[in-house]
Length: 426
Image (cartoon, rainbow, N blue to C red):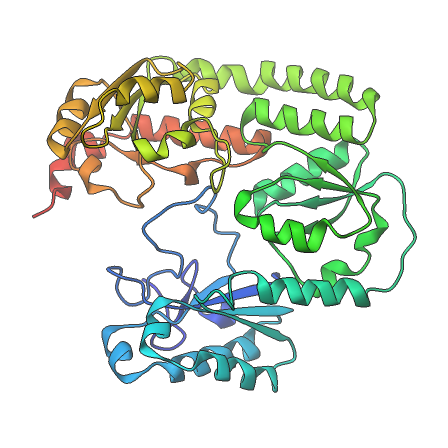
């Protein structure tokens, strides 16, 4: 069961603040309710699942977890209590306080609380809300612009790179190890993590290695691009091919053709011993994907928020794929558009128009686990199918191994096949 520090705020993975390891420079506080999850639900327990969020090593978000009574009476005391506990138990460099929709509608004066806390806390607090003026990045951009202006001069050193655009986590550390195994030293990580200390020594590296995520374009354009450092853009290192392309792009950008041959040779050896034995076990397993037409661009990756190449990743793992597209009303031909968007990589493609059609498709398509962005999609599990989401996937080779093992475990899971009826809506 969750163990709240005080009524209303919790941490992930459900620990009191005093027990958390303070190894993050930046902490985020969300002033919000966790709808439908109950008191003590994790602060990131929203409806949607993002890549890698299954990790428990990425604890850096706290929530005031507003309840109905707080909306009526006001909840400023909850935020004051939480900030006092952060001061007592954690040692952050930056705390970002996010005034989400409900506190903004009810008029909670979060800004003045943050300004007051900045007068007593030994670290910096940043405020953001849902207005255009205080958008998600402006306070962070201003902080980092000042940090780079004030950073002491350093001497450039060869063989070092800054890695930009990689979310913190176990798989990020593994990517850093792959880079360093090539004799390339990782100097600093930046974006989406930002903190003034990142600017100290950042200019020591002559090259940025940038993995772009369109959700962070403003951070790239305002913080990274103005710096006098050469930029090398690399693809997302999801999957075996994506990781290989990432390392080859790194070698090319560093003008090191000697590294490219080594990267290819090591990748071939790893695939033979570690990857192909696993893909041999996926034979006979078919996964399902249900997607609305407006989301067809996500099947192959591209410029979505996470740009996860879903279909290529599943095919690389050796799974069969059955695709169902929810057609737009009055617009025929959805199946053909879906087949094209998936690059012809799906074994079957069907169009569905209503939940009854979806039920028929689930019963006749021969699929096991079905992809859904929702944390617990009872439309699918109640019909006997496990679900998987973008959160299954991690970056790099080791992340790919963990992903394929998770999917194989789901494909073998009997719970929903035998007891899915128990999860039906009443």
